[in-house]
Length: 514
Image 1 (cartoon, rainbow, N blue to C red):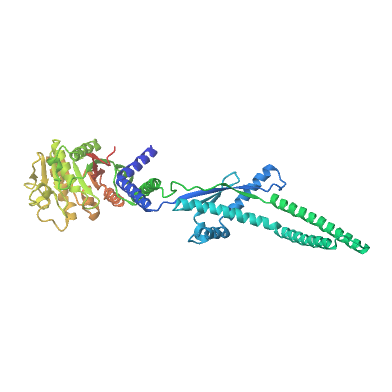
Image 2 (image 1 turned 45 degrees about the horizontal axis):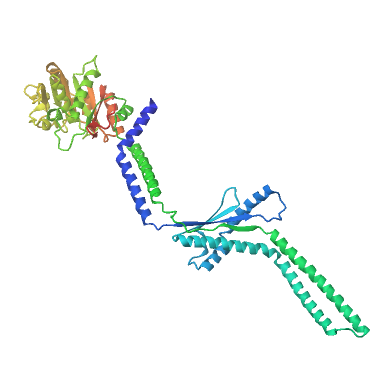
């Protein structure tokens, strides 16, 4: 049950702030759509490299795959290095620095593969593809050059030796041709020596050629291979801005922020707004929830519009009061509020009308000597009223009839006294109450607010029951709690709360959900 109540409270908060949630959602979505529409489109082109381990690594196939994956990870870090970026900028003549270019390049190793994907973003789709292809081509060239540099010195040395031997062989052949056919024994010896030297040169040359070819083969077999597996193609659709996705995300974010703001406002708002607020804060029943009157509407709505929902709420209040204390009839009712401007006089007047319309002889006393209003509501002359009755010790001729049959009013009087608390707490006030008890079925007293003086506390002691009027969304919890505490300290019987000026929606009370 507790969880159901909490859920209902959350739903009530959302319903109460639905205008804010919808407004923030629409505003955020509209702003995101407009901003996204103004941004230039960005295209992404991707080229893919395949990393293959050198065939002479001498390791098994599974280990070779793992090694290739690690090698691919290493290469993925090298692709965006300054040497590659600067060479790409030089070849393509890009008007940017290496640092600027690398921000538009994304390199990733495809999971569980030996593939490296190089992606480039640009506002021009063709240029994005050209940059991606140039990057992978430059990287392949530079990587091969780095790996082949390990054998470059040895190959160069062998090449130099081969060239030197070729020169010596040529010179020896020329010398042999110059000797011609030997005639003397010495010439035969010389020719034999030259032929022997030439044969040695040729044998050595052949050995150097074999060593050179073996070293070239070794360099090839021990070099890891980078292959351009897939070239980049010019994309047809931009990757951002994604107008509709941005709009949807902004709408969701706006709604979430609005909901958060609504709950923060509700948390910081310490006013009484609902029946549950009253019950939890004051521990008192809410006898009725009275709707807010429209602008310019007559406050005596029980007379001017008896069929309205507000009038029905006053009849509900009348019924609940009569059944709130069956064993001890509530003949003298005090209507008060915690602070001024909460509508207590309007509630007292309409409640008195409702009681009179039910056939009860009703007396409505204006005991608010600080700010009397009842004579204004009913359009009566204040005359001597309550003050005169207390001074004279009788109500004779001071009760004024109204257009409502069975309802009489005793206004304060023309001149409110300077000492209202002394008059209201006097013995004559108690005697006046007893006099009215004999002539009327119900006596309704409109008193000053509890927190502006001792008037309400004094009157609460002579009343059978006290009604506390709470202005929905205006009365603060602490003020209402203090008002109830003051009344209970003097022994007043606070029978319940009237939640006044409740916002309405489509003819129903928005907060009245019981």
